[in-house]
Image 1 (tube, chains in turn blue, purple):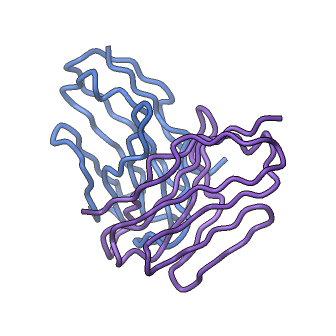
Image 2 (cartoon, one colour):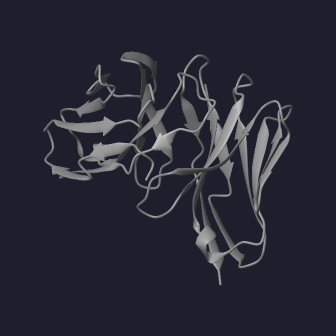
Amino acid sequence: DSGVTQTPKHLITATGQRVTLRCSPRSGDLSVYWYQQSLDQGLQFLIQYYNGEERAKGNILERFSAQQFPDLHSELNLSSLELGDSALYFCASSPHVLANTEAFFGQGTRLTVV
Amino acid sequence: GENVEQHPSTLSVQEGDSAVIKCTYSDSASNYFPWYKQELGKRPQLIIDIRSNVGEKKDQRIAVTLNKTAKHFSLHITETQPEDSAVYFCAANGASNTGKLIFGQGTTLQVKP
């Protein structure tokens, strides 16, 4: 158990819908990251939040947004869903803002868009 | 832009043999290089990492080497066991002052008993 909790584990939804994925980081970790893993793809960086503020952005679609709350949990919102958005979405956390120590991954949310 | 290339995409070895996975990164400012192992349906887990101030690091059967000049780093697994079968990802840290990691495309390692 990494200490990073993601809910839900599985999500099936229709095209055009909106979903929210939730992540609770490890106790004490201030950075939260979101990664997308499509079938046969590597891990694509979406976004990083550090202590409530957006810190880095990857190739995140405009239909996707995220935020980190004062209690440090984070939510990833995906809207106007398309079939191609079906993927595993991982949240990770680390203590600091820089990528120089281990990032701990949650178990992921498997999103299926039908 | 930032990029990490990983080879091979699949690797099959006999139990007891060694396995080597190679990665190349593009950003010369990268200074942290972790390796993650992902078993089927599970989360990626760090197995070893190296920083740019060292050239090699070992942890039991696993070692990583880094060549900053060539922007190459490699994972070496000796005396492979069936439980080493998984997907392995290399990564390099991205833009400065952030925690962004750029991952390679992954190597599926199969260790045959």
